[in-house]
Amino acid sequence: MLIQERICNFAKTKNATTEKEMNNCLNCLTTLLLLCWNLLATNAKTDEMRTVTVNGATRAYWLYVPDKVSTPAPLVLSLHGTGGHAADKSPFRTTVADQEGCIVAYPQGEDIFFPVFGSTLPGWHATGENSNDIEFFKAVIDDVAAHFSIDRKRVYCCGFSNGGMMAYTAACVASDMFAAFASISGYPINEFHLHQTSVRPVPFLHIHGKADDFVRYRHMPVIVDNMVARNGCNPVPKKIRGTDYDKSVYEATEGCFPYVYYEIDNMGHCDFTTQTEDGNSAMTMWKFMSQYTLNSPCDTTIIWEPHIEAEGWNPTAHGFVLDNGTTLLNFGGEQSTWDNQNVYHSLQLNAGRYQLSLRAECHIPANITIQLKSIADGKTYLNKTMSCGDVTVDFSVDKNWAEYQLTILRSSALEAIKISNISIHAAKTSTGIATITENGQKSARYYTLNGNKANASQSGIIIRQQSGKTMKLIRE
Image: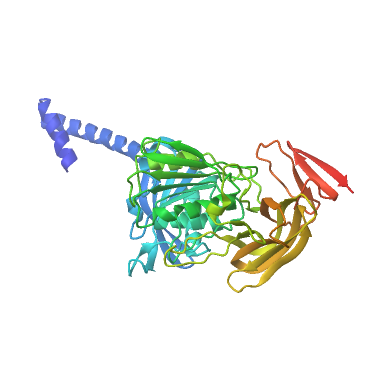
């Protein structure tokens, strides 16, 4: 009625001389207005709550589709913090979606008891393991894809606080679903613990406030160490000092992805900041994540590659014990304490077959002993004595997920032996050459016929991959 009254007033101001002329004017304008309204409705963005069914339960998410959406469109899943709501549209801003043409889904967390709050609040099961939340994310992606054209190779995950913790969980268990990840003010802590046993290296960006004493800023260096070693990044970052932030880029080495860390001056526990080079933390997330697709090349055999030999890096400041008596190297013996809030340096493996490689340099012939033990029960999975040189040893573990202590010993503290180039790779069980992507690097990599990583000097039939070419080498 209000629209009609306005149209009627408009007609009167034009001095319509008869009631018939006024009615004709009213009808024409009403028809024109309805046509315009229908046209706008057809092109209008989607901005609404939707539901999906997951294992018999109804779950909800807010869907935002901008007016000018790309086809097929990238999709961002943006996860709220504890006690939040999908309607908060946090932490990924719709203004970024409008500008970049991506679709954003804001899933709604289910009610969970959080000991730190002493109450039940909406949130995420950020345990590092598969859960109904991961199934929910899959259902959300499928539902969006059923109504809009999306690029499944360009689906991304980001989150705030407990949502950021869940982004780390998704990076561990759903790296085949999401191409890249970002977190602001959130990493696994307290009842949650960082799991970094994903099936591939993952591109990850983290933003944290230096004044955050809730999800504590002081524990972030350990999170960085664990993610950088799992990804195989260069542990010596490229540092950039902005106006009111520090940015550390842990660059990708061969076959992996970078980990990027922003430390924001005077920022507490927040889901957004203007203190990045983009003046918009959501845009900073987008610019990082959108560089990657699920087709971005990487070496899926990389499990743990800390690069302890990197120039300018002190491993003993990052959880390693080196050259201490008969111990050449020790890593992974830490446990959860009240002080560390379940954040500590960790070597993690899923059940499977692996290959440990390292270089042990010595001036006179000597032996080293390599030991790998489960921290939970002390079970030994590797205890092997080998000559110094380029060392490769296969081993298996049978626990679905566990943390391990790696120790390398020498016979005498007087023996001068240097350990470098240590790494753990997944062993291939199938016959044939493993598919290795070099990610644009020119240096050669060597593999056995069953796809395991080999040393350049190893004897036998070796496959060399360099600059996209494969060669068979026979060494006696």
